[in-house]
Image 1: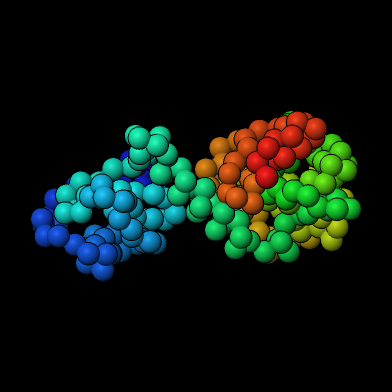
Image 2: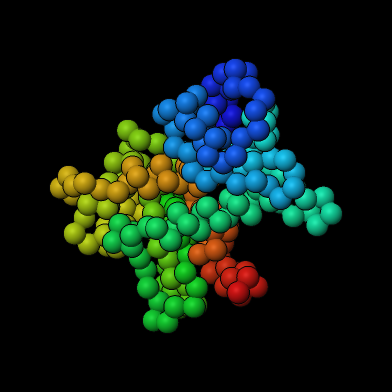
Length: 235
């Protein structure tokens, strides 16, 4: 991750040793990284580190701007993973900002729990989860699908997801596609690429990936009854 996004790191050498408040730090970062999105800049307790959100990723800088690193910051006494807590918070914000009109939602009669699931049409465990949708719903679990074709853009899985999201009846199209049937839809401006890119930013590496409203991830397929117990333990 560090190598892919931060090839500009050698440029930090010329910044200088002057102390920087948030405004000065932001200005310096914009000068050396004009093409990235700089989010919040916050001090990390009394560590002398600043947490900076860059293109949705958490990066740490020393106050004098001479050192930068990417990794987890853990408070030793409490064993609190400060970085993971921030990741969860960022994921929650991203999920809260989504429009359900761009999702495929399966509603129970009475919702007790809400899950956002990144799914791939060709993923075996995604198909297993989908074939048990009635069981999840019967347990009060509401499932909102987002597309995550694991093989990426310009793949058969991506095209299948677009056909599903462009269908007039997305729920039926999803069921058909998961059962190996062809879904041929008219082209539309689908949200599939945006959802795939969001999944990558949120740390999705496999499917299905289940996200709680809190931003916590439950990776992989989980049978309905077991999932209900997990959700109960977290409520």
